[in-house]
Image (cartoon, rainbow, N blue to C red; front, side, top):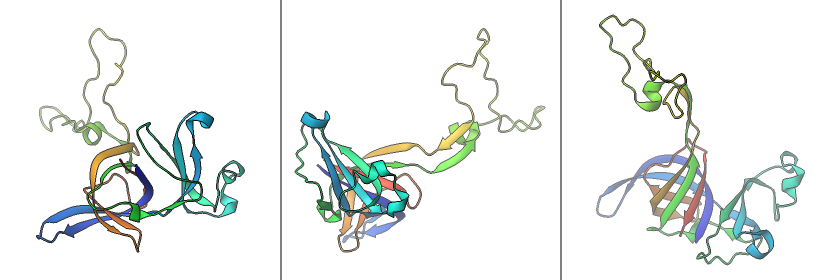
Length: 204
């Protein structure tokens, strides 16, 4: 199992040697430092905690400072290990993007763009009401939500509300190119989130 933290930069095109054009997302990946290793015998589960990014000591609370070894980090994340995973890491080890290679299959987790409070047309794809036949200002309204005999709104009814800012996991993404000198990784396809979004990357 291989893992790393990254930030999303932007999207672009990558040309292969045969001229094939691949849409890719540019990720600024690592380096990350292993700050703690959790073991099932001692902690109840197996995982590896890593630190990413540089932060001032004054901006970190005291509880986190105790778990930061080797520096002060902007982000601390844990990667849970399955019983079948074989990972030999020690506290203080630095993991960079060179651990990955083109062709690796990734599982990528990030937070999607926040779109604020949206109506049913944008949030759920409703068609809205007709513009004619007596309609005046109800072109993007949801319509009736009643149920005849029901005296309440059923659970799960699609209505207007907050849209976006969801934690999304995308599987089977492919590494296209790795630039170890500049800590860059090109991943095929689009990854959820805006520029600067924290991205968790796992390859099994």
